[in-house]
Amino acid sequence: MSEEKPIDYTEERKKKDSFQIWKEKNPVPYYTVMPDGRKEPHLSPSRIKQYMDCPWAYAADRIMKLPKPMKSYLMMGNVLDEVVFEEFRHDFTQPIDDLVHLAYESLKQRMEEEPDLVKNDGTPYAPHEIIKECNSFRTWVRGFLEALQNGQDHEGHPVRLPQVTDTQTDAFWKLNIDGREVTLRGRPDIIHADGSVTDIKMASAAAPWIWTEGRIHSELQWIVYSQGLNSNKFRYLVLDKRVNKDRTAKKPTVRVITIDITPKDVEIFKEKLTTFLRNSDVLNNHKNGVFPPKPEYNGIATGFGWASKKQMLSQNNFCNKLCDFKEECWKQNFSANGTRNQTLDDYGYDLTIRD
Ligand code: SF4
Image: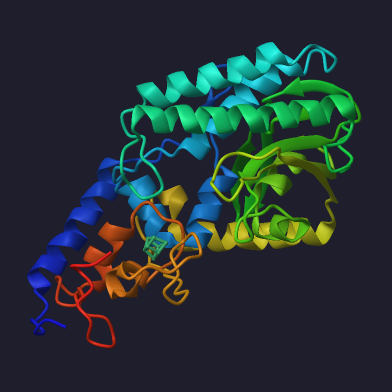
């Protein structure tokens, strides 16, 4: 390790001051324009979840507004919900070839036009890599639509939904917390004739990210979406993005995970919301909010579960959460002005020149 240097507290102080300025300059745009023109303040479940996962990442994203890259999986999810399912929902018996082609073209156009798009390793896509991603997407979309048409996926998982009446509908849920009225807002993907609500999730089938019933309990959307639409029945329609050993796309599995919301679920949500409101001070423009970093160490594995030599360095392994602000977080919170940046691993090997 390089020689220890004293921390420059003037610099630390400057950072704090600029953070305060950011807070003041960026009032929270958390409102919806209602049909009568009124601006109704609201909070989204993703905002609360982001704070719960890591308050510093929340501040970096929503207060400091640090630049963050775009990832292809976000684009795939948007094309699936807003383009493919929107067309398909009117007639589940329609031929799917045109929709699969539409999915391919929409994703390709979005990926080609997005200036901030990067791969998981942070490097930009080459044109042939965009085509490869779009081809994978085509395979997954085809499997998804076939499962909906057949009432089951190719492995026999039942994929049956009640009649669809609407898609992408705003759900508002008003609560009183600490004497203040708070409106939660969500936008579930599908509303059914029986009043139940469904959200589509397209996710990796790899062990750390796969959607199972257990995962629901660390999510918040299902409570807000269902309560905002006066329903106690919620389901996730999950498309598992499966891949072969050579990373090419494999036919996906498609599963429906259904959950009935209980009063205890609502109670726990309200406690999480109360913690968020008090600690972030969001309703007061974050003025007295606290935003500590919450790193999670997971040995020397990368976020994708494999180990690399570079990952043995503190600046690369201090937190294994998937996070767009890792470099800045290390720099501002843990590096002690760069004095803790390792070049040697714990056994004395210089790792900066390898891997
Ligand atoms: S790197 Fe970890 S601790 Fe830092 S902002 Fe991201 S999630 Fe939080």
